[in-house]
Amino acid sequence: MIFGDIKVKAPIRWAMVGGGKGSQIGYIHRAAALRDNSFQLVAGAFDIDPARGKAFGETLLVSPERCYPDYQTLFAEEAKRADGIQAVSIATPNGTHFAICKAALEAGLHVVCEKPLCFTTLEADELRALANRQGRLIGVTYGYAGHQLIRQAREMIARGDLGEIRIVNMQFAHGFHSAEVEAANPATRWRVDPKFAGPSYVLGDVGTHPYYLSEVMLPELKIRRLMCTRQSFVKSRQLEDNAYVIMEYSNGAIGTLWASAVNAGSMHGQKIRVVGSKASLEWWDERPNQLIYEIQGQPQQILERGMDYLYPQALEDDRIGGGHPEGLFEAWANLYFRFAMAMEALGRGDQAAVDALGIPGVDAGYEGVRWVENCVRSADAGAVWVEYR
Image 1: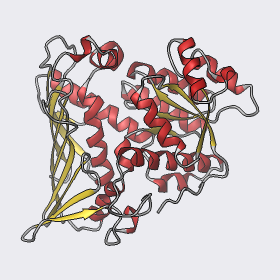
Image 2 (image 1 turned 60 degrees about the vertical axis):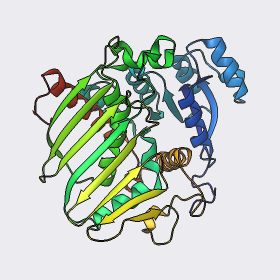
Image 3 (image 1 turned 90 degrees about the horizontal axis):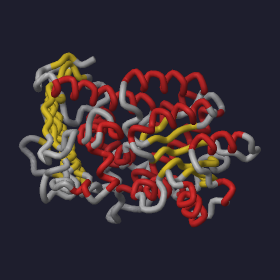
Image 4 (image 1 turned 30 degrees about the vertical axis):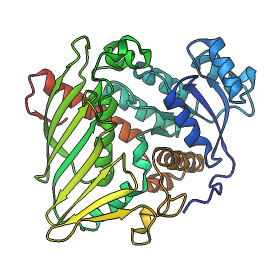
């Protein structure tokens, strides 16, 4: 149970690039990072418009002289200060992530980055090597990976409660872009433009979320080959707004993933179901406090967050007792709480402590990019099977 006690010696001095006025994701980052006093927001380059960014930063109680016009100035000026920033979060369009992340690492900063970390595995490899040389953390915000019941599912699978894993069914299929909303919404417009979003829309934007949940729950499961088909149902879009992926794993299991922004009527639709030889688990982010557990031949069980019958790993990050809802903000806060502990551990050279935290780090960012690359390669070749590489 988390009671708000600080687990780091002092709050990490922290900045943001992007996430300015009107940014939903920017607010989520700040709400998560500041919840446990593990971070202190002291600087930022919050907006592509410097004046607007400075005005917004001041509303966050950031000193005017530490509200910078761009990330280059932010990193250069903060490096001159004895109390300069130690970490930065990147909440900007996809096409900027690689350059900002690389510059932050070169400046000796820890990084928390929105996904995708970058566009190619070559770029991801470069960032991973740089982070290792600098001894700095790259955290990737696969937000719901911080939810306690994801850890419960991981532990149940590891202990053999489901038996041999046969099927993994994943989806993140909402309906909010079932029409051409980007015509009037700049925040959506860049997501469907390959110049800013990269080689994929929904595969990278939403599909990587349940895919990473599967990696958390099933770390030993490795893809052998996959087949992907993708569509743009809104014809003005250059990138797909719907995609299906079939995956064959090295142990003989099969996986499917549906990523969509045109599932009309669906609010969010992020679900993962793991089927074993003895039982199945299912989790849905719209009802995050319940994990469905179905043993063959027995009545369905609903496991509730915060209850003593869960494994200890699922109880560590509870912020309130069972029965009260915890969801997105708490899951993100759990990630940031652990990001701070990882940053401190790296500062004392304790890689083992970092590994034990189970956070989505640079390897998670790399695997997300790798998965999208393989999906695009299959879809662009005519929805053919491709060996996973």
